[in-house]
Length: 142
Image (cartoon, rainbow, N blue to C red; front, side, top):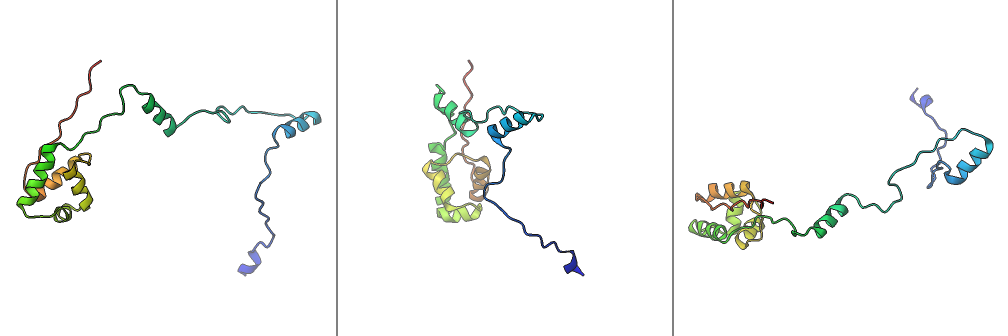
């Protein structure tokens, strides 16, 4: 009984489906006297810059330079290394203890990482030592 409900009409897919007609279609409709409604699409076809490109351009033209991200301080790097070595752990051991990749520990100890308070708390618990926090920079008042 299921076979009787099937639709066996052929369907043809074309690469370029028929469109609304464009200018020539509008002209032909006007000649026939048909009612025509046209809608102006704002921003279509213009060379407007939007999204990430606009944001990147704003950053390039910003006179203050890019925003300063917090960095791992020298005292934080040394504190992590000393606490880790006091426990006789490798970077891999510490990474395993805090469920992070060894490259994260390497980035912190080499100063490449952007300090993440959650990771610092994990390191403090695993190492049993208080680590120095990076100071927050206050924006200059204008």
